[in-house]
Structures are given as C-alpha cells and as structure tokens.
Image (cartoon, rainbow, N blue to C red; front, side, top):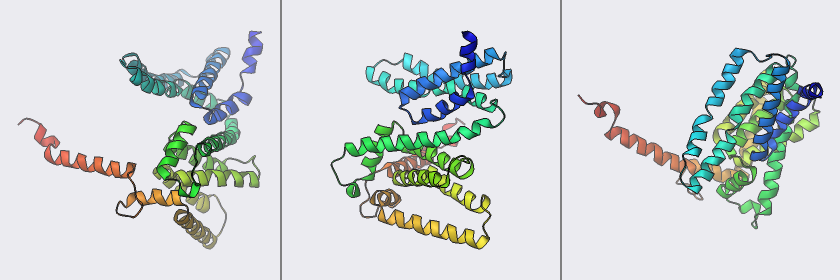
Length: 296
C-alpha cells in the first residue's frame, strides 16, 4: 500500500498541479502547494535523500522568512489586525512549499519539467477570465466610461492578486509562449497571447509592462531569423499599434495620464501619492540628513 502511494507521487501530475495552482483562489492554492511539498518530502524519503543537504539548507533558509509573519500574527492584539496579518500568513505559506517544489523540478528527469510550463499559461488565463466575469457582473456602468482605478481595484478583489503581480505572471506566460511552448499550436499560442497582452495593457502595471516590452524586443531580435529590415518594420508596427491602443482605450489612457497631473481627466492615484512621499523624503533629508544626526 505504501509503495503504491509513493509511486503515485510523480512529476506527471505533480507539475501540472503545481502550475495550475497559480490560477486558483489564494486559500486553495496555499493548501495545494503545502500538500505537494509534503509529497516531495515523501519522495525524498523514498529515494533516500534525493534532495541534497546543500539544497535542503536553501529550502530551510526560505522557510525561515515565514517566521516573522507567524510571530506578528501571534502577537496581534485586535481582531482587525489579526485578519489583516492572517492574510499575509496564509499567502506567505508558499515560502514553506515553493522552494521545495522548485528543487523537485530541477531533479525531475533533466529538463522534463519545462514541458509543463504551458499549464502555467492556462492558469493565468483562467484567473484573468474568472476575475473579469466576476468584475463585470458587479458593474452597472458602460465599460467605456469605467474609471481605471475602480477597474484595477475590482480586478484585485476578484482575482485575489494585485495588478502588478498579475502583470508579472502575464509577462512570464508570454515569455513561455515565445520561447518554451513547443507543444502548443500556432493558433493556440496566438489566442493565449492576445488575451494575456490585452489584459496586461488594460491593467497597465508599470514595471511589468516595461519588462513585457523588453521580452517582445528580445523575441523579435534574438529568437527570429528575419532580416534586420523586417525586424525593424515589425518593431515599428508593434510600437505604432500599441500607441493607438493607448490613445483609444479610455482605461489605458487614464493610466498614462497619471504621470501628468496637470492633464485634463487626471485623478488622485498611486503615482501622485508616490511623488508626495518622495518629496517628503527629500525635505526630511535636507533638514535631518545623516551627517547632522551624528553627535560631534
């Protein structure tokens, strides 16, 4: 019985489950990752230490990062703070599981784990579609008149993920489509790309979007066998098309206008708040910089 259970713990289902977990609600993903990590430990016991001691030390170091969250939760006085910190404790439980699963991926038949990367793409697409179904079911306004701050907040609420985090996931998924998804057909890649790119454009997380543009340039100039002229033409067409989308999609245009507070239609946003924080820091440093705080 135990032998059959050990044999059931293999990469053929554990890796797809690991990849698909990123499309699940936060609580369900956390428990699934912990169960998979426990399975990896059983595999290591079965194979008499397939995980090297040096690798296990790295896993333990990552797990230690979880302790401050747990201590903060245990020392919390109010129910409100307990619920707030409890969310972090639940989310950061991945620190206990993901490093162990990554070691398992490295040891799984050379690079066979890479063929499971498209499962991650479908998980991210599923999360995006589900979040938008729930989002639009709560709205009674025209999508074209939707404020981008409201849109991003509702997305975060329904996806249980900050738009910046989703941008990182979407960018990684597009990189997989460009460089690793050899088992997917051209049209399947095309549809997945359109969904991921448009969702990232609508949310427009700043740094992930810049990284996504860099991924496109890397693909055009280093992963294709086109001539320099054709590469330049494709790049120009892509930039022109992206510019048109930014101009004609209201949500995206509002997001871009955040950088120009004097522009018509600009509203209070995180960019302006960060500018105020930065200016406050500069003022404090000017009055109380490090040299003046040290006694002579």
